[in-house]
Image (cartoon, one colour):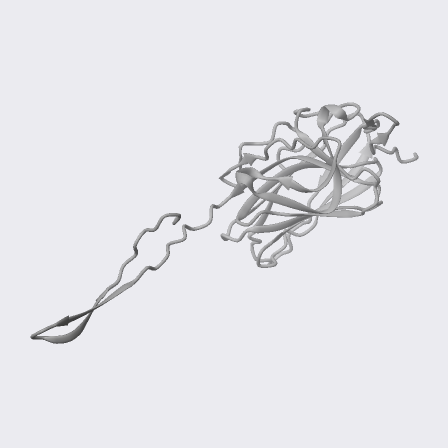
Length: 247
């Protein structure tokens, strides 16, 4: 059966999303080997094709990414919660699920990002600092394709490849991917790979981010004095003095 192209098409007046063929995703995690130590980067694909995404992941309360107002625009930067930014290794087109033919099969108003030209076999999402849990829904742009997703922490630990095969079927639903850490490390990046290089689609991003520790400036104070009877001397006063702008 010939692969069906899901990529959006461009007409003279507008962009038309052509996620026409339905897709069924089958999750195939890599098995753990006997004697392996516990990986602090945990993959959770439990929700499968169920929408919306869970409010928690690995015990972390998740926050949805804010609306991206730049619809029908290519971008390599995605607005993240709290004014942060997530960056992409390749530019992708911004849509909402209801712009895709057949819908996103979830919450159709959510932002989705499409490798419109299928020019890249992979895309890497670089997280804002301090993110220790990330979730998204993803699929490939055509059926009969394989997709692999890997999360890597800021200390270089990898989740291992989480593999998905996408066959032509009766459902048009992307699959949930969640990663979180158990050792306090942060997830630095998530890489999505398409074996055929026909294009990737992902969306419905959520994250948990540990806020940075407050910055306290050391404002030590040393005073010098002279007493007519005791002579010269020094009095040292040390402490943490709050200043405007300290957080």
